[in-house]
Length: 209
Image: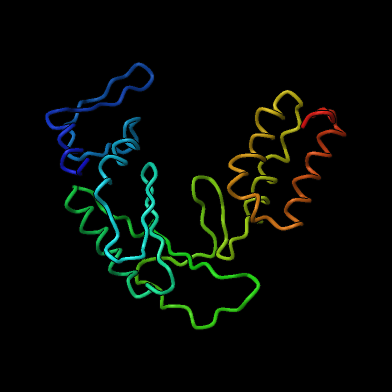
C-alpha cells in the first residue's frame, strides 16, 4: 500500500484523547501516523511501505515507528544520500526525520583491527558504539555483553519467588534465540550463575528445564 493510500484511510477523520474519564478536544488527522496512539505503529508500517533505499546493496528494516538502514562497507559513501532520501520521503508524507534521535553505528570485528580508517561522521548524526533495537542492546563488535549486564542489573533486586518465572526469567530469556549465539563464555556464565542462585534461594525448581 502506498503512503498516499495510507493517508487516505484517515481523510476526513479526527481523533481525541480520553484519560481518567476526561475526553479532550477532537482534532483533525493531518498525517497518516498519530503519535502515541494505538494505531500509530500499524499506520507507520502501512505508510512506510514505499520507503526504500536508493543504493543497490543497502537494506531498510522497519518496525513500529523505527527505521534501520543497513549499509555495507562497499557503499559507505551512500550514507548521506540515504538520509536525504528519508528526509524527502518524510516531507512528502507530512512527517519529519528527527536527526537528534538518529544515530550511526559502525560494526567491526572484535578479533581483528579495521583495515582502514573509519568514515567521517555525518553532520548532525551521533555515532555510537552500542545500539538498542527492540529492547536488545548490541555493541559495534556484535557483542551482547552490555545487554546481559543491563538485564542482570534490572532483575537483581527482584527476589520474590512468585514473580521470578513471570518477570525475571522472562527478562533473561527475552529474544534469546536472536542474541544467545553471539554471547561469549563470560556472558553465559553470568546468566547461568543467576539461575543457580535462584535455585538455591528457592525461587526456581532445580528440576525445571
